[in-house]
Amino acid sequence: MKIFDVKTTAQNVSIEGMLAIKGEPREVNTRMGATKVAECTIEDDSGTITLVLWGDQIDLVKEGDKIKISNGYVKEWNGALQLNVGKFGKIEVA
Image (cartoon, rainbow, N blue to C red; front, side, top):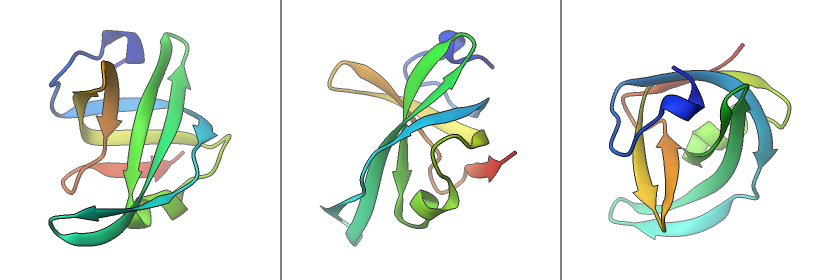
């Protein structure tokens, strides 16, 4: 799937692209306790999308890595689409 084809509330999303920007991790409190989150930008030849990384996912990638997201999902947050790996998804460096 290309980033251009991603729609709100899409499930089982598989995308390959380059991690263009890796945001600084920040602490957040969730119902599961405190954790870190980082907003990143992934791009392919069709566009860009925000990739949200949680906890240990943040340390798996760095800017410039070609990555593959499998079984991710898309949500809309503050008017923008966000790709999430989630607990059932997988992130790999190609």
